[in-house]
Image 1 (cartoon, protein in one colour):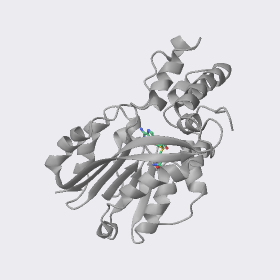
Image 2 (cartoon, rainbow, N blue to C red):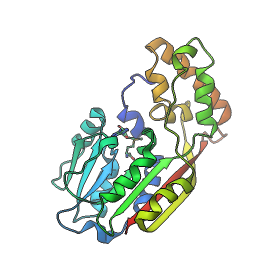
Image 3 (cartoon, rainbow, N blue to C red):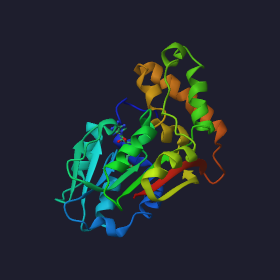
Length: 267
Ligand SMILES: C[S@@+](CC[C@H](N)C(=O)[O-])C[C@H]1O[C@@H](n2cnc3c(N)ncnc32)[C@H](O)[C@@H]1O
């Protein structure tokens, strides 16, 4: 695939980079308390579960637990349901901005989803209050908005006849400084870890960085354009990212990517 063909969540394009995206999900999962998987009458929620790949790993890691994936995208949920057949693992449509659990949660886990929600920092204390004492909130969000990959979205947006249509596009809601999340969660936490990791992601193929962001951060820009303009805008952005992230002689493109992790245990 060269140019992105559709403007809805493209589950196939997203999954193309599953390996690079799975690693932070597992790094986050490693900080969950195994004891939190076994309390009956409770569930582990995967908030913004996408195609359910990580929900399935959660169900494997917590073999006693009920795992429920929540997402607002029908396309992602279709994919998740098609890939899974287990009584312990289910998927439901829901908006994270108004999340109300049907079964009391013991773990609220979210990989790479809350960055899409403006004002998400104010939602985190509410999520903590849904947990019983000892329950865990675990969140990972990309915090790469100062990298060339994201700055070039704006530059490409201003570099063509699509300029006016893209003027108001904000892209991914800003992820705040780590200390801000620490401050809002500390009063509700008995243990709190906040950290960042920069992954040197190894990409291959044509337009690797543009292909990577086309299923995530570039999506709001692509959605605002008709098919012809979308292709031309994508090509402009792909050219710019190819210069900023040159392909090495071995065919590899390194794409450094900063991610923020939060793991809080409810007092
Ligand atoms: C980058 S994907 C991550 C998917 C999955 N967590 C993973 O790690 O593979 C982000 C997901 O968040 C979902 N999402 C974005 N905003 C949402 C909202 N307000 N409510 C529910 N899901 C949302 C999208 O539909 C998408 O599936």
